[in-house]
Image (cartoon, rainbow, N blue to C red; front, side, top):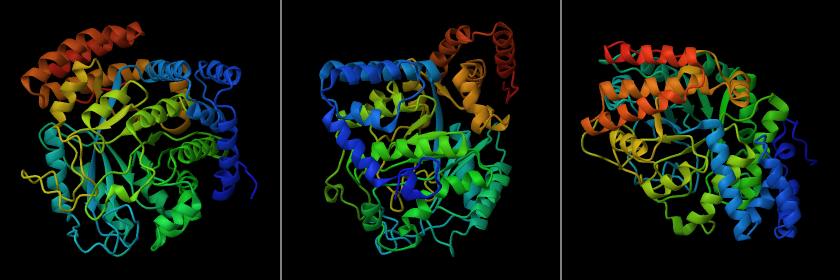
Length: 472
């Protein structure tokens, strides 16, 4: 197989030999100061670097170069995303699954975990609980099971979620993380009004992938890896990539996910909307000691930095798999979306008593959404519940063109502040409301367009008076 980023064949756009060659090139040049500085100079233009160039930066162990990488990641994150951090929550619909994934407790042979599937009434209760926290954006999760979790069930759940209005609550964007499927089914998801279609590759090493997925439809590496092209063929503009760091060597995975991003740019005209960076963590029937490729914190932070430099425009997501301490360190390096108040069990939000018996993984950051919002504000970030771009049709290449031009700040900054204001009025604790109001008063001055800034100030006053859902 020959490497071809424009090909729609998995083994051509994620070419094993090209990854090996890139890793070898990186080893040979990890102390090549002239090349390293050349790559960094290119990266400073904030237009991205290639997977091979990223591999060289990742391999480098020179302290002063690594410090430059870190500082550049911070600068690029600030340039495109400012201090805004988008908030979301996962919603687990069902843990029935027919696959044999060796790293996931949902695997079909696990007899310890209780199997659950939400009814539409239970979906409704979960959504009301999430709305009562203040969430506006969800990521739907479900195991792969054509009998228990057919696409029709997912579509019915999406319809239920969008239909629920409770007090001032409303879910305004539903992202979907379900198994690879057909172009026809992706078209149905698009018609149902989903935001981003998310699918984690888990690992880009085909041999490892097939060993880690010994049984079930997910065993088909090519079908899984080519899913994003089918999704875009089906009309979905925004897709989200991710690998589970720790299943395979992190260097291999870094190059693989960047090659996938390059492929989407080359073949579809727009790269991934998001990249997620989860690490293997403990769960029912899963022992992380079984995975020898576990990634230490220092390397994990560098991975986030290098991805941010390589794909400046792409949103980056970190989940509650990670601790508060880890999340705090990587926020400035590239992360633009985080979850808050998350439950990874089926039906976990409506129950006051936490029951993780059906959880997919252990949650390290168990704080409430309000505690996470308060923490972000105190760190100087703007917690954003914005869904405006999706609802205004600014998706895919339209969103990317706004982001690359720098004009997105005239939308994102006021939208972030107005959705934060909604949260403060409807859900925040007194302390969070007090510090949030001060943050809004300060950050509204950073909206560069005078007309938009004045309109935003007017909308902020109207939000205080009980009106809702303004957006640019």
